[in-house]
Length: 385
Image (cartoon, rainbow, N blue to C red; front, side):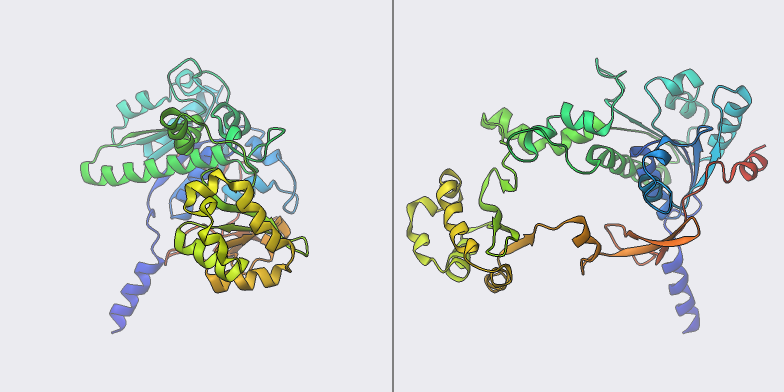
């Protein structure tokens, strides 16, 4: 009985990537996001920084004097700063890579080739190595050599053309292209690790900000290329579904509602709007007609919502099992009952950070700290002499 209990406890406490060494020549968001999630899963991640450190360290000073970006995606890593113009430092980096399972880099286009540590060269030397290159636009095409940052790619990919409300352009409020590229790199690396376990061979993984953004744009792309009509910027409404959007209550609270099928529409009309006559109105029969007559449909919803307090509306929505969400601010997220957080020490003080978007049985209740610049430099130099 005790043996089984001990085995079960050990299994739950064993992280899936324990024993995996990752060397990450990284900066900003995309690559650090990828390597941080590998570190969360138990991999040992050595972060290679320039002498002045990853420039994301200077984005802000919001978390006890440290950058919110850096704190978010660099926890649990070891930091060493190297001068990549120095031959001895390059050789040290190569010695680390020679022992690594995974090498990740998101330097400027062509930089690793000039340093002699590009994927093709490394994999010829170390066949079991998994390399991951994260770039702005990929490694071919006329855009290959351009610098690419999140907002630039949001614009170049057309993402801003389907985001927000009509009028002045607006960016998606988080670094969605960076994060998605990091996620895609993470998926590729995890698949490459499984393949290596099966074949003994490493792989090259490539991810780009533009490719990641373009894949997110699949529905607008297909609608435009084959449907002949691009979705418009409609703010907090859905270009293809009605009613689906934000409506204001008597007490000036904005509530987003979503109707996905005719059963939901019937319950919404009967229980929430108290307007069963809408079910017989030809302008409201089927989603296509409601979208075509969105102005009429939205006006009918607004008439009811404008006359009721938000709590009354929410009670009706719950009774009708209508999907809804309140338009919240960041302060509301901080106090949200569904928010999961973990404790992390930043400059000797514990802070709360949002937990990962998934939950697993080996997950810890705390996160390790992000490293200082070159915090592990001496130890790493001694280890990889």
